[in-house]
Each structure stands twice: as C-alpha cells, then as structure tokens.
Image (cartoon, rainbow, N blue to C red):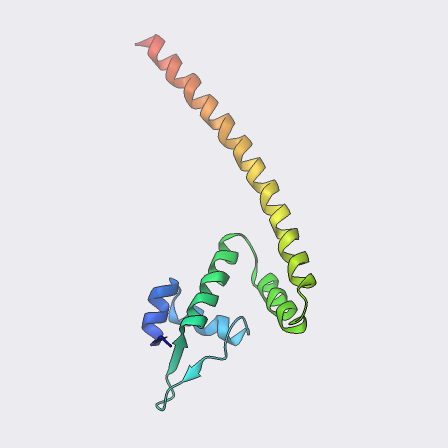
Length: 123
C-alpha cells in the first residue's frame, strides 16, 4: 500500500498541512496512521478521501454539511439514506445555482455581442 508523508499528502490534495490536520480533527477522515517517530503517514485511501472532500467543498458543501455527511456514513454503514438525502438536497441547490449562473452568463454574452456590434458601426 502506498503511503505519503504530510508534505506529499498536502501536494497531492492541494490542501495545506494545517487544513489536512483541521479536516482530521473534525473527523472528516482518519484517523491517520503515525510512524515510529510520531509523524503522520497518509494512506492512498486517506488521500483519495480528502480528494472527495475537496470536491464536495468546491461544490459548495460547508464544513457542517461535510460533518453531517461523515456522521451519516458512520451511523448508516449498512444503509446510505441519510447520505443520499444530503447529497440530493445539495445537488438540487447546485442545479438551481447553475441555472441562475447560466441565465446570467447568457445576458452577459448578449450584452457583449450588442456592444461589439455597436462598436463596429461607430468605427
């Protein structure tokens, strides 16, 4: 099994060492194994899991949502209803936001086209 020193895990996940430790303290992943010197040693699974957390954060889940997500996974190791509900709810909010952003982008594109055409007639 591949393992990573803290600096390598930080580089692979794109998170600072402080953020990795913060996520671990919050119980979002881990516990992280330690070597004989007491230094954290991140497994491939740890790094992959943090990658999922980073993706969920980029999708707009807050820290409280991530903690609920992890709590649901732990409570319902045989069933995932709580996890599915949380993710579906957030997916629906994200789709609404995307629709609003796409509408705003369309308006912006129309205005750019309008002002470009207006500029061509002035020249």
